[in-house]
Length: 99
Image (cartoon, rainbow, N blue to C red; front, side, top):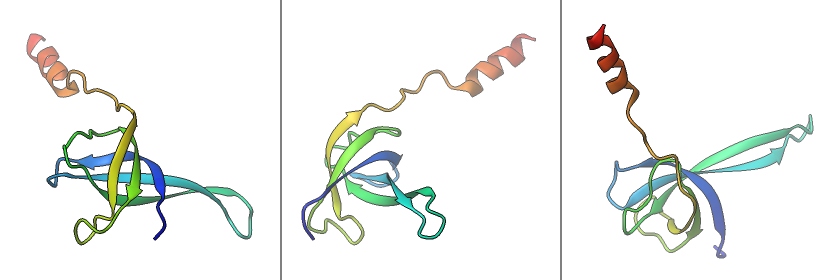
């Protein structure tokens, strides 16, 4: 397969060691109605330093197989994902106890 780079969003991380799931969306045209449709595909990506977080926008590139399903490797981070703030459950429990 020729070298190719894809841009996508990290949708799952932390469930497998050194692996992140990246969803890549692309626009395509419906053959009959000619409407523009968004199609997406998930790729298991090798992340050697476990540095990716949910919501990061990243560039991945294909590589020789790392495992049974991993065919892409993390190349660079374009945009940092939203940093988690205080969880809403802790604020609601504090509000309930003060009432």
